[in-house]
Image (cartoon, rainbow, N blue to C red; front, side):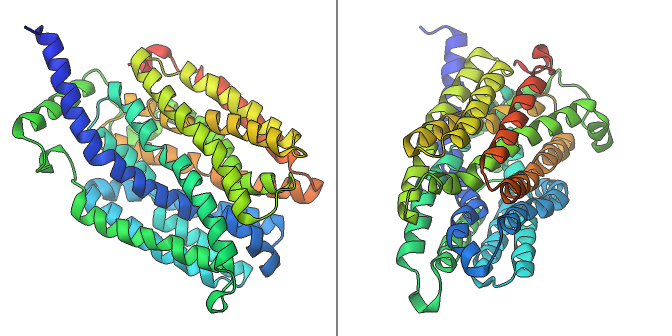
Length: 431
């Protein structure tokens, strides 16, 4: 006969497996659509900048201005998600960003470009932090790093399939119905947001108690584990208490530095590969998929290892340092496509796991409305790096006529982030 502890562990595992397969693949698909609509501008740039006469600085500012709208509306959006429920609010987010993403096909001026990028940020604000908050409704801290890491493999999956798709659309639809390839790309890649927005409305549950696909015993098990997970968390759950907590601002800074490296990689990877002499949008898309394939393995393995060993800090520091080496190496080897791809793969393997691993830090102490506001605040302030990163890289490239200075700057920011991780006490987050 199985020992009671083993029996309970097996029961827990089976219930969490059921929750995982119900929620995570669907949420991954939604996030892949979101991320593609956010960063496909990197491919549009290959045609759009020349046809509309946009300088590198204009592109960089347009890529980054998305995050100003994101910053302003993210905390209110997460609080509204908690008020109205995940099903309604996430569906609203996806439908509105689908409309705005499609409108990019009709951009003909710098002003329209900037306006739509800002509005896209407003529309999408709250989606990612809302999902991070939503996962805390189902999974305790000891299971969250692996689950979050698997969920966030949607980013490299978006690159693996989305980059070649974007290049193929731009090459093969160019001139159809009098539209350029980049216009077709925006129109066709906006459609999945509508479809998944409708699917969210019918598929997603607001929480454990609303899940009709769980038995009453399974609901009680999940609720009990979540209640036990909250025991011992510091009492910083009020909105004012959260924003007065110095740890929050440390994590905002840390997330800013890591996110700068991530968006530097995703926004500029097509440009870095094109700089090696690779021709053709589809070929650039295929090659840019390689680093994302490598990143999937590192994300899953690091997330699993962090939960298994209940260790959070060094699982952030080591990949961050690898990412810095990869960013700097990719810029330094721009004359060789194989070397550039190798360093971009190292950068992706290091930088993309940082975000899911990072969230095990703040969610270890936040709960309730404090979690809703704290997660959104960290994500919104951290994602301002999405504004500064492309602007800095674009500006430095305009000034120096070279990609290397921008990539070296981003690599340095990631190293500073790695050092800042070690300022968080291990006993606070290793659970």
